[in-house]
Amino acid sequence: MTNPERPHRNFYGRRKGKHLKQSHEVYLDEDLAALSPGLVSWEDNPARDDLDLGALFAGRDTWLEIGFGGGEHVIHQAGENPQVGIIGCEPYINGVAMLLGKIRKASVENLKIHPGDVRDMFDVLSEASISKAFLLYPDPWPKSRHHRRRFVTPEHLEPLARVLKTGAEFRVATDIPDYVRQTLEEVPNTGFELVNQGAEPWDDWISTRYEQKALREGRTPHYLTFCRL
View 1 (cartoon, helix red, strand yellow):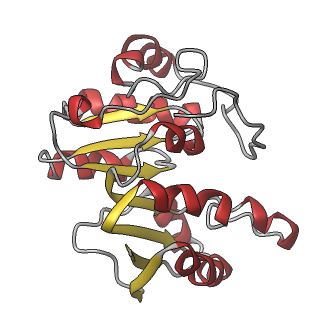
View 2: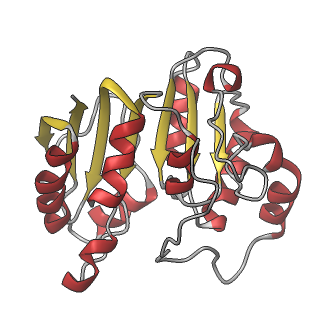
């Protein structure tokens, strides 16, 4: 690719919690490097060469989960869809460690992990290379002055649209009504069409810890499906 200089990008949120379990430290030390998609580190790939997804996943279609949290959904999708390859991006290292433990138990072989900002992944994904993307219970940034930090802004949506194939599905789940509002305003402006919106999840959905917390606290989940035009 063309720009060897790393752009300045503000990052908001936590990268690590107060404490990692000893088992999680082991997972990170022993398993994470082998599950990296490669070429994402600026130190290792300053030219931002594209990932070879065909080689990475033996020619299978590739899906992308943006911020996988504790990994419940991405590990479920990997197990249910061995015919595809999935890349999960998550900057919060405690969540990465939790997913690594789940991968050990499930023994899935079609999942790669980027423990960092999805925008770095966008830099090394080829145009029209991703067949499906998920944004599930993203950080709501509820204060009005923080809405620009949400994922559903042009800074994130435009590169997402670039890497998605025509006809690719983009799923969004949130329990925050104002996040729904902003999603419906912003996503169609960046090359997507709304296909479905409702309170019923997708047929292949598995509830996550964030959804369970929302339900316990009396908030209603919303599920939105978009198609890349």
